Amino acid sequence: MYAIVEIAGRQYRVEENGHVIVNRLQAEAGSKIELDKVLMIGGDKVKVGAPTVKGAKVSCTVEEHGKGDKVIVFKKKRRKGYKVRNGFRHSLTKLKIESITA
Image (cartoon, rainbow, N blue to C red; front, side, top):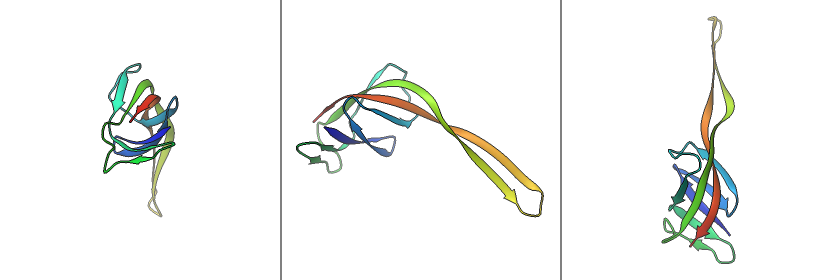
């Protein structure tokens, strides 16, 4: 069984006992959260919400917080001697999907 959920404005396909990496959530590591914006539930029988499936929830556990790969931002103006090199890393959260209830 799988589900399409909306987390922080983005849509993710999640499965039971699976992992998903999302943008940083304001929850402590080890805490349990429930996602109620379930857009679709798939498997033997498919349920599509309009816009969400009523009564459906996905329960998950926050495993850890971390950072993604470095993204390099390079700016240059030709013939002016102007070059700037910056980098940043996204803050991410790793979730373990416990169960999907319809």
